[in-house]
Length: 183
Image 1: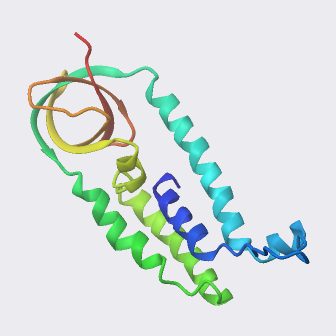
Image 2 (image 1 turned 180 degrees about the vertical axis):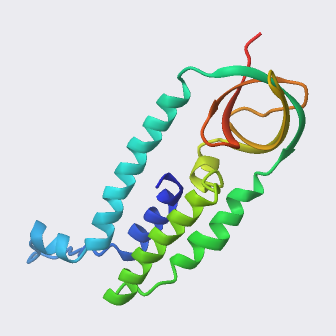
């Protein structure tokens, strides 16, 4: 859900309908009418609130205990994955016709299917919202206590380099949140 936070902001900007009147005979249309005219922006605001709390929870869990540190053997930045996600999935979704109920249903189903695919294929790390929050993505080979692991994905707030020792939290079989070991 966090990865779609930016999309929800776009939905609000594109669909919000707040009547503005500056004359003497202006009156408030009422909350019920305002909500009826702004269902998608209202739902998007709810999802944004959920994204905020999900991020806070994610951040809290990342501050927890870590596994035994490892040493980075080879490292390659793959920050372009953020842009790939944004260009391939988020930008085309804002071209839907938000006045058509059928297209909104198709959009919702498409978002669910995309989410399931991203989770099942372990591509959830390619999250443009995390890039905006200062995270970096790396593909590394690491020397662990149990041996070398190749092609693991690290998500980190700090810039990482070869030969650094990294503590981590395993998010998935090959995706870790990493922090530099404090000397």
